[in-house]
Image (cartoon, rainbow, N blue to C red):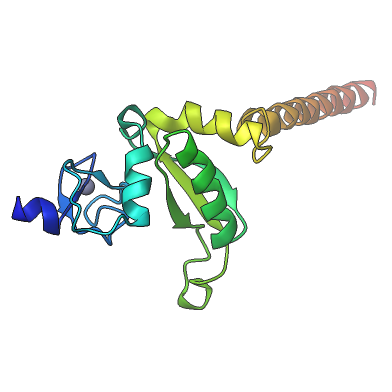
Length: 168
Ligand SMILES: [Zn+2]
């Protein structure tokens, strides 16, 4: 019980116990959840309130990027929206901005566990924070058409060139 009072938070992934002032597992980076018994001696911290909202079915699997935020404040706003639906999330500094000068500022990636991705996308869609179609296919398709056209032009060019060679 002493352990529970000192470390009331637990990692949903590796079950490591953490003190109340931690927000993420120090071993695997998962958002921590409240371990059990409500201890009246402990002040109800933001971390507790947060942990109680998390739905366990959304806290399993690899972390997946679901959104990008321009800064920490925007990222925390997104985290708050996700948490309202029970989806735990964590922030990562967007690649290329993880140098010391940029630690406080700079864009963030919002990551959620694999099992929470669908719920998270639903929340973000309703909040107009992401586009309705995944980005990749939308970019991929015009590129393929363009690549196809390019190949077509080259083939036609070769045929024309071959014909001119035959004629001379
Ligand atoms: Zn862990």
